[in-house]
Image (cartoon, rainbow, N blue to C red):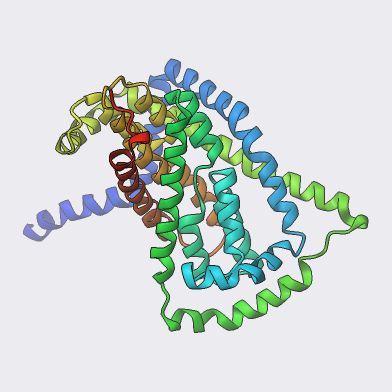
Length: 362
């Protein structure tokens, strides 16, 4: 009898652990019904956000990256920039293409390109994980245009956030040059890598007039599939945020998190609520933080810098849905985004305190 009583709590724990995801899905479905009115508004808002902002911004870039995969331009860029990218970031030269496109176009273009590199054999698994950690970023259109000009009403703030965001992702890239950099990992994949790279070199430059229509249709369909998937995440997380707000879960988490912000001199509870919202979904959180009136506007800026560096759980799941098609682990990406958020915060604090042009406190 004693043995049975002793094992019962353990059995319940294992049962909960095994069924945690189904239980979450069940709870989500129940909350959809309980807060149906607010959820409907949130879903419409997410759909409009996707249609008006995400599709115009990302679809052309997705099509362009797909089209470029049928040429040897990435391979040529890799050969030219390999002497720079290899010593600094310990990745092949083609990583420069992923980094530049990731910065120009924003989330989740960098992840898409890195995954394509891995699938086409342009890098090893470890190199893809290093690239993934720092090449998937917010773009200038969102940081300067949306956050700086639209939300803060000040382009200078947008420029500051973009500079610190750029410095932060470069810093993460340098840190991650040591990710699984032992010779064991390189030797393990070098034969497979060289073989797949040669295959890619033979098959990459395949676009010509006779198959241009086919290449265009394949590129467009692949880009549309990715954009539709992103749209699903935007709507889903808009509804999740609505449920968390309606059930006061965010308020509860914020109440627990608020003492940490007070350590840094942030006493307004609204910042805690907005920050937690931003950890879940970047755009909503940034919007809430920018809307909080504060004489020390540097607080708003610094918190936005952290959120821009992290990207939010919504972006994390978007990246995971892309990388899950390959053998690239999501773990280095998560570590990289946490580091990037910390670096972005430190750089923003530095610029605000030591460059008077960026100190906009009243």
